[in-house]
Image: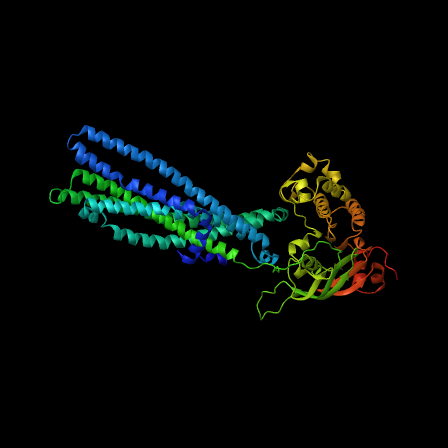
Length: 598
């Protein structure tokens, strides 16, 4: 949570300039909003003048007709002010919502383009905080801060103008408490800033804890860890509560303090007026107008203090959002990247070295996951990758799809280095079926096509029939329109695996990758899938990763990985004939059966 602890400046001109750029598409709306805020401020500041005119000119002289005119004009002012204030409030909220929509879309688009290295090192809960809490804070600044602050400033300026124009001595008396206000505001800013930092830190901790434990709820329940997790969340939630109470305390002290200063100013106005009523030429209407001015003056002062708090939180949130947007953990895509219009499916790894910790620093020694890996898979061939856990099998799949870039060597598709190919275009020709299937909330059809409009309904259903998924789909209520809960919670592991097969085959890929794809299904389903795979691999280059050696016996080539290196390669029979790692793995799996020759 170290990143959350850095609050930054209360006001950063660089960040503010960058935030203002999001208002440029709506600059005409902002200009209109400022004009409306000036009109609201002017109508607010002029109101006490009607009180003075009514008391000194109409009531004092018994002019009933003049009093009626004054009241009607005042009523008209209030109606006009109400209409202007309505349009001003609506416009500022409109500006805020459209600006935040643009910013949130930019953040989400950026997250989609970031490489997997970024997600390997960044907690998901922190990213959720960026897209929700932090951006919502900026919404408050855009809708209630930048434009509305003009209303408060112009209101204060108008009040001061009329006060000093009406009676400058009484104006100085009523404003004599301002030094106390400035000192109190200084203390409030400092304490509120510290309290806000703590609140933001605790919010981030709650988000991270909730994301991790909701995702791992199955483990919590299997191992009866509910009470322990509940205890940890109790402590985190209590810290968040205490931080909020602490921040509320400062607000509870500051705002009554402002009210007290306002009351003190009222007392000074009455005292000075009573002592100098005749000498200073102060009329009853003037006193009443100043009492109204005083009440109106402190209201925007309180609002500006709130705007300062909004500004402070916005600076902290924008700093974190821009830090995310400035993250360059992107796969480099060359401007002249090649397009793969046709693909035969030849795969070549040429002296490939790869480590996940390539950003560990110049002096750090890379922890090589793959070491000088070289192999060729001809078009239409099936290659199997076997080996112990951590041997580097899945890393090969990630590199083939270019989720990561290698440090040494090259990976070629049809003789073209994949770094010269647009990653999106490359992945369009590769279908991957993983052991851990991820399904989106929605329906069956959407989880097979993934929104690809080029996949027709007939093609989608054909893919489901080939892998055998149609059997359970057509028994469901709604069939292909049946609802799928989050992560496929209502489906069995085997059903989710079958859907992932249908999803992969629906795009008709030239390269098919199966990463432990049948390890989570029962024997009957596995036999059905194997029969379907045998048909579908015809004419496609395929890579199969499996711990069950029975699933790779018919592969054209078996590559045995060990500690990031290729130790053996060949067919099933040739590798069994060689007394090596593959024979040892096979013996361990079938030690109760006499299936190994010799």
